[in-house]
Image (cartoon, rainbow, N blue to C red; front, side, top):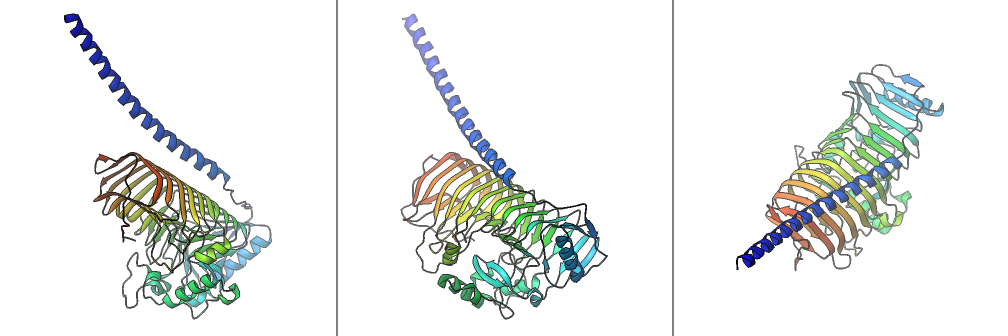
Length: 490
C-alpha cells in the first residue's frame, strides 16, 4: 500500500513538473515568436533604409552668402551653383528675410549655420505665380511652398545648432480656421468646416471627381488654398537634416512623386491647422529618422492621392522607414491616409515615442478612396495616451462623397506596443463587407487602461498574441461586433 502511495505521489509530482515545463515552454515560445517578429521587422527596415540613395553634392565648391542676404541674391547663387555643376551655399548666422519662395535646383546643398534663420514672407501673393502641386491628394496649380523644387535631383538642405526655417504661415493658416475664430487652436481641421478656403476646397474636390484637365485647375490669386512649407515635386535624391522648421501654413514637409528622400534629425515645431509634420505622397524609398514632431496635426502621414484623381495617377507610396523619432502631435501619431487612393505598401516603423494624441496608430480611408494599404510593420512603440484609439483601422473616415471604392487593408505585423491609457478604445478595427480588414498580426501589445478593450467589425484572420488591456490577457481570436460602432475622435 505504501509503495502504491509512493508511486502515485511520484507520478503526481512528475505530472506537475511536466505541466510547469510545458507552461515554461509556451511562455518561451511566445517570447521567441515576438522576438522573431521584431527581428524580422528590423531586418526588413534596415534593408529598405539601405536602398534609399543619398544625394551627391560637390562640397568643395562653396559659396558663403553675405550677412542678411536677400532672396534674390540667394536664388541667384542657387541658380549659379547648379549651372556650374553643383556645390554648397552657406547661410551665415542672423535672420535672412525671404520675400517669396526659394526654388531649389539640382546639385545644390543649402547649409544654415548655427544661429541662421530663413524667415519667409507672410504675404500670400508672394507665393505666386502658381506651380504644379497636389492639395490633399488632388492635382492642381496652386501657390508655391516656401521652398520648392520640380523635376530636380541631388538636393540637400542642412542646418546646425539653432538653424531655423520660419515659414511665417500665420496669415494663410487663418484660411483653414473656422470663420470668426480669433485665436489659433491646435488641430482645428480647416478643411472639415466652414472656413475661408471651404469654397475652393469643394471646387477642387469636384474637379478631381470629374477628372477636369489640369489646365483648368488653376487656383491663383483669388483662391485660398494653403501651400506646404517645403515641397519637392518629381525629384530624386533629397536630404533634409539638422534644422528646425516652424509655422507652416499647411503641411510641413511634402515630397510628391519623389524617390530617395531622407529626413534626418529635423525638428518640426508648427501648431496651425492641418500642420502634419511629414507627408510623403506617391513617393518611394523614404527614410525618416531621429526627428521630433511637435505639430498641430498628424506627426507623419503617408499618402498617395485622393479618390478618382488619385486612382487616375495610380502611384503608390512604398518602401518607407520611420525610426527613432518622437511624436508630440496634437492629432495622430503615425497615420496612413486618408488620401491613399494610389496605394501604400511596405512601411516600416520602429523605436517611436508617442505622447498624448488622438489616435496613436491610425490607418484611415472611406468608400470614395479605393486603393490599398499593405505590408505594414510596426515594432517598439511607446504611447502616453490616446483620446480615441491606440490601434485604429478606419474605413469610414468622414468627408464621404458617395462613392463605392472600398480600400483593401492587409498584411500588417504589429509588435511590442505599450500604451498608458486610451480614453475610448485600445483596439478599433472598423472594416466593411466588400473589403474586410484581413491578415493583421498583433503581438506583445498592452494598454494599461481603456474603457473599451477592443472592437472588431468585418475582419478576417486578425490575431492577437500576448495582448493585454486593463491587465487582462486578450483571446488570440477576438469576437466580432454584430453592429458598427463609432469612434468620433479625430
